Length: 109
Image (cartoon, rainbow, N blue to C red; front, side, top):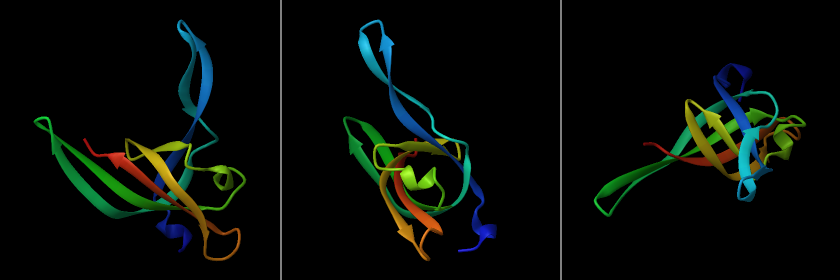
């Protein structure tokens, strides 16, 4: 992986609790500044149910290791390319403290 391959902007989002009219509610807020990353699509699926078709895409994103990215976990989300991605898994790859690989899924419709 080289820095030139980092051609996508990822904005991580984290759930926070806010007081709403019906008690505490979960809302998503930006977490940290956007980071550069790369994307490789792994799988896409389509399902038909109740007369509707839903499709999903699973991709792997690679970002530089940092204090922010090392804290990302499966409870977080991020936006990239106008889509909101759900984090499925996170692991360190390559040299120690160099890259973080994030497996994520989104609905493509």
